[in-house]
Amino acid sequence: MLANSAMLDRRQFNAVLLGASAIVTSSARAQQVADIDIAIIGAGAAGLVAAHRAREKGLKARIFEARNRVGGRIFTDESLGAPFDAGAFYIHFAERNPWKRIAEDLKVELVDDDTLWGGFNVFRNGQPIPPDERMRRRGAFGRLTAAVEAENPGADLSFAEAARRHAPELESAAEGMTLLSLGEEAEHVSIRDYQMLDSGEDFVMPSGYGHLLERYSRGLDIALMTPVTEIDSRGPGVRITGPRGTVTARAAIVTVPVSVLQAGGIRFLPDMPETTRTALDGLRMGALTKVALKVEGNRFGLSPWTQFFDQGSGALGADLLNFEFWPFERDLVIVFLGGNFARDLSKAGEAIAIATVRERLVTILGKDAEKAITGGRLAGWSADPYALGGYSIARPGHAGARKALEAPFNGLVYLAGEANAGAASMTAGGAALAATRVVDDIATRLAR
Image (cartoon, rainbow, N blue to C red; front, top):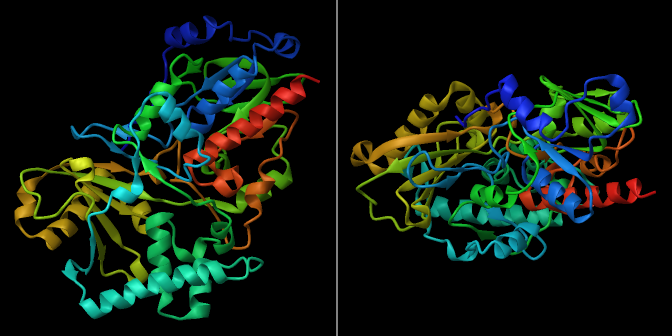
């Protein structure tokens, strides 16, 4: 599993906060003086962009992060020797994605996703499917894509229902599409929300998305291992409270995943308005999950970026795995899975998850793969207490939930992240755009 953050001891915490004059010793002072202009909760994509934008606007911002690192669900894991992105991987819709410009400014190498292709094959229980079935399945995905695009935008159906309306054989294609791209069963995904999302040119970074965020965070005021448990906006300022103290701010931006808010990870005083809670209830977190396998000494005749899709014994692709071989010529196989299958494996723990996907890969490649697989790593975001999922999914009938989450509440408390980024939602680029919008609004309000 990804490492959880440890709590700071009192001396460390005081060094972080007292050094910035942030500890509040009385309720009176909290109401009279704001220590900072903007308190930002979370040092992921949205939090880091918000802090930079605040600086550009002449506002003093501090980020409070529960983990012992920046990046949130963007993390480059190097524990297997060769790095891999355990979370976000693509700079989507690069034409307007802020992370492309940031990467270019920092002289980070970008690679066009269109160049990453090594072919693919489809298996069932480790055996190649017959060529005629493979062609039917491939045709089904194409028909499903066309059906999704043609579906009445006013009909907010699930992917599964849309597939059933067009042809029963498309239902398994819908499952495969949503499980491996969104991490969720097709029955739980709004097709209308998906239709509204941006598309465009995609880029990746051989050096790692997580490393880009680490570099971008340098010089910002960030308090790591500093969870926030309560946000009180009943007074003139916003009081940000955690286990070690309270800070006052003129506004607050909350960038934690919607699943953490749904689970009550932060208490709001007064409570979030009903409109906000209803909007949150319209979303759920997909469970797109990765298992990285270190495979050494044998490439099995496969070129980099070759993909194997393996359907196990589960119905409608419930235990579908996608194996991606040798990314960037590294001795790694990245295994993707989603939905309840991924949730169950993540909950079971790293050892069981690795053993499960390892067994499936050995079935496909043969016994020689047993000795070639020398290590593994689970990136199980659904079992991570600071994530509780991969990224947000709109439930069928709730495609308008993202827009409803854009409005501030309880004075100057905002939500910002991949969940309320409009057409850019579900991406790190969307989180950056949402953060920029929110800071600009706060700057305007504070200037009045």
